[in-house]
Amino acid sequence: MSTKWPLVLAELRPYMELPHPLPTDGHPADPDTSKGVRAAFAVLGPPNPFSPGVRTESIDVAGVRTLVVRPPEGIEVKKGVVIYVIHPGGFIFGAPESEAPLLSTFAEAGYTSISPDYRLAPEHPYPAAHEDVWTVWDWLVGNSESRSQFETSQAILGVDRNNIILFGTSAGSALATYLTFRLAEREEVVRPRLVILDSPHVDSRARPFPSMSPFWKPAVENYLWWSSAGCHNIARYLFGEDSSAAKDEGAPDGVFVNEYPSWKFQELAKNLPPFHLLICELDCIRDSALEFAGKLFTAGVRTDVVVVAGTPHFFVGFFPHTDVARKTKLGYLEAIDRALNGY
Image 1 (cartoon, rainbow, N blue to C red):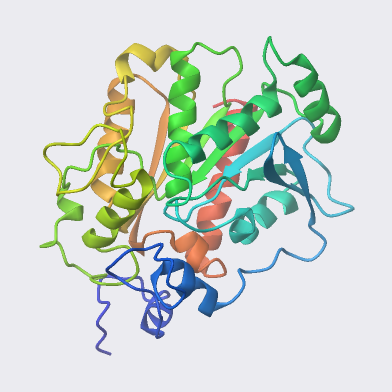
Image 2 (cartoon, helix red, strand yellow; image 1 turned 45 degrees about the horizontal axis):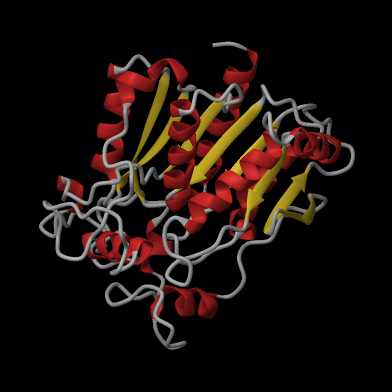
């Protein structure tokens, strides 16, 4: 049977064939309600619901709404362990609830999770999202200046600061990576036990990797933001045309990079936790993620890398009830178990 998605896993092709209203060019966060990714996702309807019995509540953490997700009644709770999940959305849309299937998987396995509803660009350009993610982390673990904060988070979550798992997807992976390296650079005593990155968006430079080239059109040309144009548009509206961030001279016009143009792998290796990377083969940011993994290996950082053939960006979230997504989420649970109980 012929298909215009020959390199996509057969299980995912029916979903790829569905008509979708998502734009592939223009401003992803266009304020015009008839345009942009935000409007398109509104047309698609609400996100997937949480699994039955999974308990959720929103709390305020220094002005940042933070979703707390707990196991259903009757599930044995993994005491002391908290998974800090940073949602995707290209920095311009999304909310913690968009990761409901993933958060449900963690809850059904006995884990408590939290997820910050960080501020979004372009209304709140860089570094607003980074600041919100740091604020919630600081509340979660406390520090020498904010012991009362930890007492509060410990009372609410029962968190053991040595057993925090950091998880980020797509844009959330960029925020998780920034947080991890910032903690390492500051030599903070409390750092994640493990960092899991799904569809890693981890290179702050905008230089065109092969998988971002407009000539690289294996399977997902012009589908969602998996095209090279989509990657560059998101970069523009993350940082803003008037951003004070440094411009990457080798990048297309208008693309800016953040204050960490090159992660200090060798210098910070001793302070970095283990990483688990889930990379999608048919993703425009695939090659930057592979290079990131190579730098972790070279620096001696314990790193698991899983590349899933035939999958597009964020397939675990877009197609959460497929077999490949379920198996991938089981892989996350196995990685967490290894990190907590010894490699």
